[in-house]
Length: 386
Image (cartoon, rainbow, N blue to C red; front, side, top):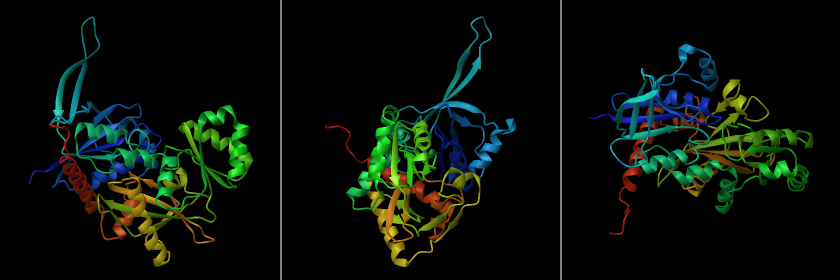
C-alpha cells in the first residue's frame, strides 16, 4: 500500500514557537513509517519556510530552549513555498547558490516540486492556529488536520469565542474586551470601567494568544497597570475577566467532524498560582490527574458542554476544551477552546484520549483519517454555476 506523504508544519511566528517544536517532535515520533512518509516543514520565527534536514526531537519547550543554545542543534534546510492554488505541486523547493561574477548574489539554481497527501499543522498561536494557515491550505486545496478557517479564527480570539459560547447557553466568567489604544489613551477611564464591572482578582490576557503567554493574575489595582502593559505587548485586543474562585482546571478533548466525541475529562493541578507558561512548560512541577477526580454527573456535563462548544465554533478534527470548576459552589464555567492543543506525549489532549482507549499512534492516525474525510466531503461542493 502506498504510504501517505504527511507534511508536518511546525514552529511559526508566535510566542508559542518553542511549544510547537516539542509538539511536532512527538507527532514525528509516533507516525507509523509503514503507513506514512513524514516531511518536516519548519517555519522560522521570521516567517521563512524551510524543508528541515531533520525533524525536531526535544520533548518539551524547555528542552527546545536549551537545544537552541547549541550550534550543533541548528536546523538547516532548503527554503520552500506553498503555491496558493490546487495542484500536484504542493511545495516548491528552492535551491540557491551565490554567484561568482561581478554581480555576485543569491541566485535560484533549481526549483523542484514536492507533493503532499495531507498536512498536519502543529502550530500554536497567531499565524498558525488562528485561521491564517488554514486559509492558505484551503487555497492550496490540501487536506489538513484540524479545524478550518472559521473555527480557528474565532477560537483564537477569546472575546469572539465567549460571545459564541454565551449564545449556545454555556456559562462564561464575567469579562470585558478593550483595545490597546483605549488603554494607552485613557488608562484612568479603563481602570475605573474595569473596577465598576468586575471584582478582583482579575485575569488580564492578550485576546489572540495561547499557552498563557502574556497572561497575568491581578489581585488589586497596584498590579493592574503592569498586567495591561504586558498583555498589550502581545496583542492589540485585551480581555479582562473575573477569576473563578478556588478554581479547578478541568479539560476535555474532542475528536470528530460532523459527529464529534468527547474524551474522559482530566484535571490540571498547576505548580504556580495559576497555570501560566512557566507552570505549563518550564518548571515541570505541575501535574495532571486523568481521569479527573470529579463526580460522574459533573464529568458527563463537562463532556456534553465540550461537544456543544466544539460545535459552537464549527470545529472539525480536534480541539481541547478548557473549563473552570468553582471550588466553592461547584459551578462550571467554560474558559476556551484550543483548536491545536499541545501535542507532546505528556500533553493533556493525547493523555485524555489515552485514558479513553485511544493511544497516541492511533490518535494521529484517526486525525489524518478525519482530515481526508473532511477534504473529500468539501470536494463534492460546486464551485461554479455552469
